[in-house]
Image (tube, rainbow, N blue to C red):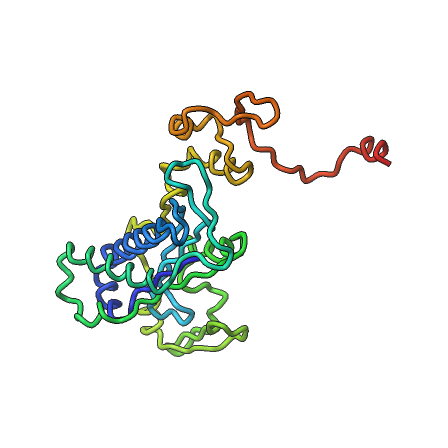
Length: 276
C-alpha cells in the first residue's frame, strides 16, 4: 500500500479549490508512482493501482491523502512476462516523494493557483509511505469502508448537549479510545470540510487495473498462474509474439480455456470410501 499526503501548507488552498487540488493529488501521485515503477532497478514494468481519497484524521482534522493498493509487480513492456517486485521493497519513497512534489508543482502551474503557494513548499519534504500488506485482503478491508463512509459514524458520537458534541476516537498507533469534546459550531466545521464536491470520484483505477485493461485481466491471471503461457483470447499479446505457446510435452499450440477455482465442498463420500 502506497500513501501520498498533501503538505499542511496547501491545506487552505485545498479547502477552497477541492475539485482542482484533489484532482491534482490523484494525477501527480499516480504519474509519479507509475513512472518510478517503470525503472528497471525497481519493478521495470507497468503496474496497476486502485486509489482512494481520504481527507480526515481521527479527530475530524483536515488531512487530505490518497491510499493506493498496488499489486507487487508489473507487466513487462512486451506484455509477455510478469515482473515481481522484491518481497520487502517496492520503490524508494524518498525518490517517490521528490517526483510526486515535482509533478504536482508542474500541474499546479497550469491552474492559475501556483502564485498563491509559498516558495518554501517546493523545498520541503513531502510525505509518502510504502509498505507491504501481504496478499492485500487486510488492506482492502481497511480501504473499503472509506468508499462510502462519512468522516464520523453515529456510534462514535457519545453526547450532544449544551451546545457541545462529545465523541470518541483512537489515536494512531494506540488501541485505547480517547474522548474529544468540541463546540457544535466547531464540530460542524470539521465535519463539513470533508464533504466532497458534487460528482467528484474518490476511487480511481490506473494502469493494469484501469477500465481499459479489464478485458485483459484473464491474461494477467494466466501469467500469474501459469508462468509465461499466453491465453488465446488475448489477441494483443499473441500478435506481439507471433504464435501461441507450445505444449512442453507434445509440442502442439496451447489454448487457454478457463481458470479453475478450488471447490469449497468436500469430495463425494464414494470417493472417500474408495480412497480408503
